[in-house]
Length: 291
Image 1 (tube, helix red, strand yellow):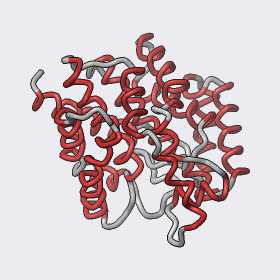
Image 2 (cartoon, one colour):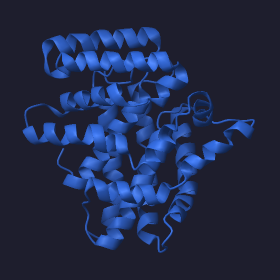
Image 3 (cartoon, one colour):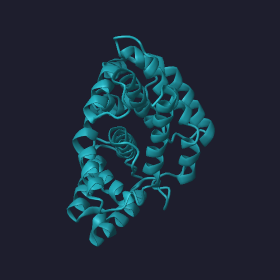
Image 4 (cartoon, one colour):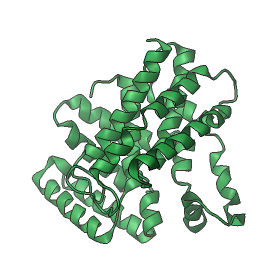
């Protein structure tokens, strides 16, 4: 695979991953094919419009990784920041100012840069999860230190507000850990269920999402609500998993009731949804584009 082909490959699977995530249905409180979830300002087609403009971003992040020639991988994060700023502007232009993919732009852009650098060094186009995770850790090393200055700032970001209130590190912490939550929770389940070849990909992704909702410190839920609501989301997700999740009739009925309940409560587990997309991207980077 040439450099150009690999950049196109990574860009394509990144877009595929975010489209698979939004298409997975039903997802309690989240935008899907059936309804806009707990969101009054966006729907399925808003996500399609946003996704349609992000391809060049992932291409350019991968290209930056391939072209990187230093030993301090933190510099690679600096290199792709301007690319990310442009991607956010393109996203907001496509959606009329609605934030559909800001977290994904950040996290999956770093993955694209990471595998670009790995492709150059290892001369292959598939990578195991540890290789991707370790390279992401090197690129993002120290990014949570920015949160330590939050107490002295006036105009706080979303993540800084959550850090001051709960001590959570949000997407910064997840990236700096090399997506440890995905490695521990979602990817083993994704590997197992796809290998079994028993269930449709939609049903598999619902099951993976429920596991993420059960065990992720979802910054979207915390930001919109509080720790009590996050605990509620986790407990409800554990309950439905004990019923078999989307693989049993009883579980399906419970998921439908969860969706209505979360919509009524304005709960949207967007952090878990982002990790689902990240997990898909990492899965394809390991196994090839087979799903």
